[in-house]
Length: 380
Ligand SMILES: Cc1ncc(COP(=O)(O)O)c(C=O)c1O
Image (cartoon, rainbow, N blue to C red; front, top):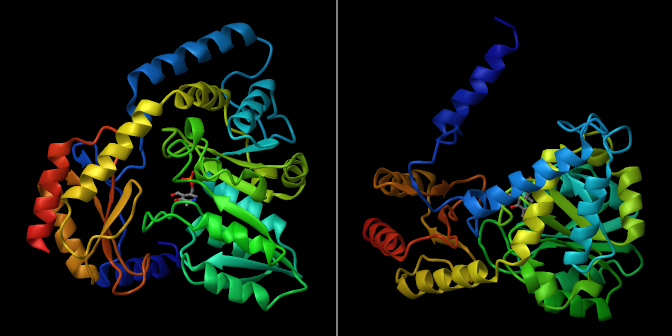
């Protein structure tokens, strides 16, 4: 046995003792209340047929000309091709952005963007509840970090005023992944009249769901011109994987030169990019599914009664169940009845804010919602 293995075993045992051990599971047999497949596109047969058809056509057109199975390298070495650039151009157009740069995942996009952008003499103002990928990007960045209270634009205003002369960035999510609440984007943009800063918005949970043709919440609120960079991810409503950073051509060129998660990583394969291009055209036409999702969210909210339900207007709904042990107990009861949902425990959320996290999607059945609410409320 390697002499370092006991350290690994010890760490796992500590996690187990604290009730925090993570493990992989299959959830296919459960009723889906935990995936990010907001529009059901990950399992949409019609989209799947189009993805196959488009890729077959692309293969036929490119046989023998370029690598067809893998990208063969990073974009800067051998992995660039017209398919990827066409996708980026179509994606920029869809989101009314000057440019888009594709990353292998949202995690990589945030890591590359935030670590490369903010310099030693800059100050980065971060909402308290930012996603781990943004936090890790910020950890790698040289700038000073200032955390403001979650969604509290007045607190942000106060913090911004303390740094009148520095270059300033503000980082928020349009829909927060743990609470499902929306950032006060309009109010934050208004602060730009008082303080000089650039705004970065992670639209992971808003892309495909909000805005004209699913272009996101920033587009829905008509704030595109006030936002320096947006991150749209493809692993949620798009039903696929990957992400783009949207912004100016200069930002794109900067990231190509300085974002290490872009520079030193193999580019997405042609099959992946082709599927994204097909999905882009498909998701623009999904207004009916977006409407359906809104109806399902309203239906859910109309039928919850317990005071511990969060106030989210999005597809992410939460039931506060303080204590790791208690929240796990409630989750297990629901799982035993066939509901696929997850307990969110400390330290992912602060102590006392442990919760059941539920995600709704356009295919969620009303009866399943009623049964789940009844089960949770009668056991809490
Ligand atoms: C707000 C937010 N940003 C970024 C990511 C990372 O995106 P990806 O899953 O594509 O790596 C997630 C994923 O959960 C997220 O919730």
